[in-house]
Length: 331
Image (cartoon, rainbow, N blue to C red):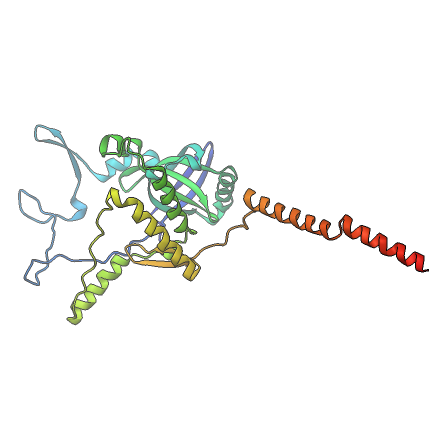
């Protein structure tokens, strides 16, 4: 059973909802220790008093900040806790916003929110359902682990999910930080071909289709070195596509994607860091006949109608009438 990493109260208006916060994700990176090269000697880090050279226990460490002139202001954990909003146990909602308006660049890390107690489950469910019906996210702030976070709370799959967020001044302006393409524009035929390529590689979002293959390779490397086996070197990254070859490369890519889908009936996807794989594609709705197809069908129907008229036309009617007259005289 997971253990909560923060307990507190969500407050909106005069309503308070006790909650518990749980990590929604976990890392699967390979854990490494540090060694001095050429030896089996581990590298250790210690907290040492720079004046005495003696090691200091973690509980005896306070935080300090440089205020200039070699002077420091020292703050202990209790003092930092005393100024935290709600003494670090309150998550105050400042506003409810349209969930679709939040740019994902502001999201930092995901957590699950659960009711604080069984008695508060009803109030928790009220907030969850009301937000879901309105498609709103709650924006608030909380202090956790000595840091204040902007947070967005949203309903998802029967519970409330909290996303810690970056503040506006923490998000860099790309127009100031990086070199953008500016006025560069693709040619119409290149854009059409690129759109075809995107369409041919499109499919449903299935998180389980993707795997951290780099970590897999690290584990394989560790196992290979452990067994004394030969290490396989990965392929180098592909070179940048030359602009003069772009159209031809796009055309070949579209042809390859169509051939792959035609052969297997599946859409090609790529696992993280891995080779292309194939995944089933959902069948879309039946396409309606376009104007050209309708016109062709209309022409065919008209031709058939004319042909039918020709078979039972004036000449045939005259012959039938003459035959009927002859039979009448004979009688």
